[in-house]
Length: 299
Image 1: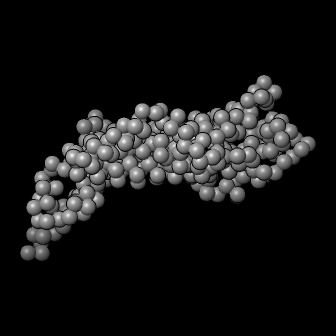
Image 2: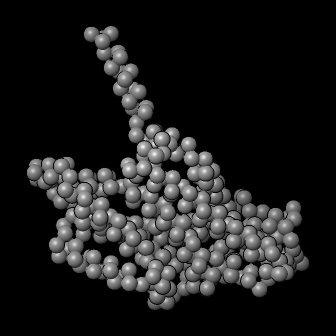
Image 3: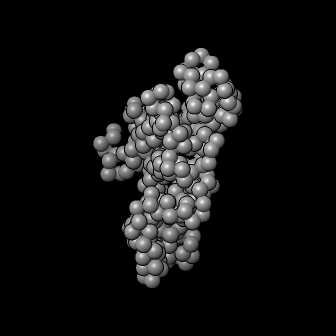
């Protein structure tokens, strides 16, 4: 008996080690651009966490005798018009940009997923009310809706996060609603209803885990969109007030010095571009891997 069961144990171990998530990770590792992008994002997160130790100077420190200094060993990316180290400000600014992206996506994700699940599962009047509310929000471009919200709440970093998050709610709501409409007709949902499982338990324990793949992809891409939206709003003066080292605000403050100090506009622009590009690359790879219709193409 023991000899006969040994092969079964070995097979079960192989099945466990080669589970779906490990297979997906292997497919992800085959995408070199996505792996490089993921490494960049991880390094950016580490830099943001360790900003006081990575930055050679504090972002508020002014060196009056070194205004508009080009990149050097003391100032790796040069200084701005006030004499502040651009590299140090970019390092501290990574905290702000990542925080804005994560908080804004968190607001949109929680609100949008909840509304989409409720609308898609219950349907009828509840679905009509939520859908009409989302249609009203979609009548305004996301950036314009964020502008209106900031105009009402006032321009600061916290309100910027709220505005970008609220403006992104319709996208998550529509995605989750559509996925829930399809999932609620599945056999496992009907079986749960038949045994008397409560609706909220079905929604959050059965439906939500089974529609999580597209939500993960949209949330990943949403972080990049939120960072770009926050930088755009800060560029026009509706984001974090000075001297906060927000990348969009740094880019805005360098407009008058493009010809005199190219490094002031180049490095903040590169930081925004590379961050958004790498997060989008990771999101695209996750979409290809998690979408069952594309799994055959990614092998």
